[in-house]
Length: 250
Image 1: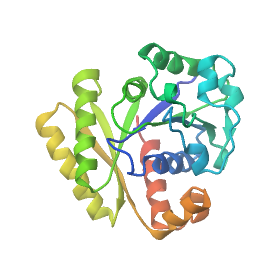
Image 2: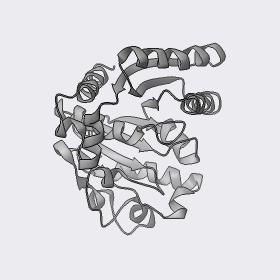
Image 3: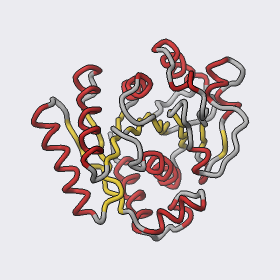
Image 4: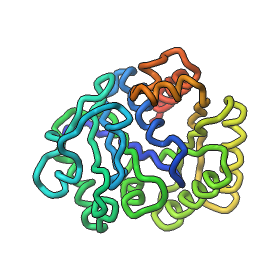
């Protein structure tokens, strides 16, 4: 791929419906604005929707790469702010049920991408499917998106437990999403952190909180990142702040 190392960030969540893909998209755009060369991979392999969220049309996707009928460079789409998008398939059952060998092969395929990359953002499927585990293991950093619902917190804890106990992932960056304000986001993080640090050998870090403002909803309807549609919104500022934190990671 290139000589300099690529920072791979796997964005995960214990359950669906917590805004994980929207976080992946807007963090990618925020990092690109900081001068990073970013590729966002839609790793929800059977139910991909990053391209839909951005209003992009993809003729080929990761299922074609796996079948050997396309390369990563051939499926790469031009996204907002210069972010490269690697789209997944949608509605293809086999892609949601890849074997461990197929998942590993897909990860190894990224060594063939000639597009220059500083940060690879991997938007995984929700939950703890085999593909999620393998992408999390392969990543430099694992980011967990959680919202203030009992099921979201419980499922996020379960995912952290599986990744740490069974697969050796010990550090997790946490994004509190769809909260009223930073205070609520901090309380949500502490709720998850207190359980995780009490029962598991892990380190959780609060990367930031994203308030659910009306601008975020309107941006989704426009099929645009909120950073582009409403740059001064509270949610936009939250993504900029988190990207700044990521830029300081060692």
